[in-house]
Image 1 (spheres, one colour):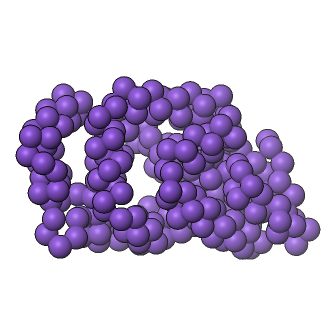
Image 2: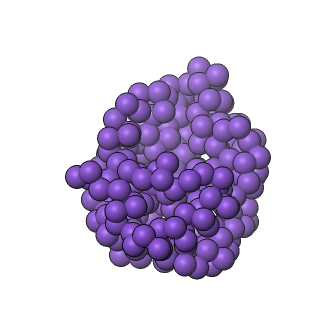
Amino acid sequence: MLWKISGKKNPGDSYVFGTMHVSDERAFTFESLVHEKIRECNAFALEFNLETANINITAEMMNLPGGLTLESMIRPKKFIKINKRFNRLTGYDLRQFNHSLPMQVTNMMAEVVLSKDRLKSLDESLFQFAKDEKKILLGIETFEEQLAIMAKIPVENQLKSLLKTFKSFKQFRRQVLKMAELYEKADIQQLYKSSKKSIGSERKLLLYDRNKIMADRIAIMASKQTIVCAIGAAHLSGKKGVLRYLKKKGLKVKSV
């Protein structure tokens, strides 16, 4: 999960670390090792800077467009049925998220499947550690860029995926738990393959395009200061993965 990147013109060794955006204990398997590298470097970056993200725009950009609601998009009998399942799983009424994008609801269900062993997710915990260590705090992407990418996924596709999750929840649960297991084993290749399969037709938008952008920006950051960059573990591997793109830029990439 942790990779050293170095280049002749770089001021020193920098690192790329694959995270899981959850608070399940399995995600913290490599925490102490990353702490060590954060101490060694000048800066730390997540996919976006938690301090500068404009959270006020979240609600508007995370909402369904044009006054749509989940209840209006799902047949009444089906809505009642899935609402009962959602309530059993989360303790919430689905109507509380009536205006939310379907993808947000799916993500919420994935988080519920995993344990909440820590108060903060791994990303937040690492960010707080770097802040306490007085490191320069950066973002590889911006929060607005991430929201804009999500907005490009057709609502119909998001809804189809959500309904599929409700229809075969046991399979969804197995898939989420498998991802946590693969992470604990540091199997980045299988994590990449599983993620690619689960997001289907959206893989170019959510994986490939973002991987290239992140690799470009990580390379620039590492040329200016030593830095630890923490990104979702599924972005590391593959022919169009961040590690491969960094190598193409002439950087040496080595597993720690």
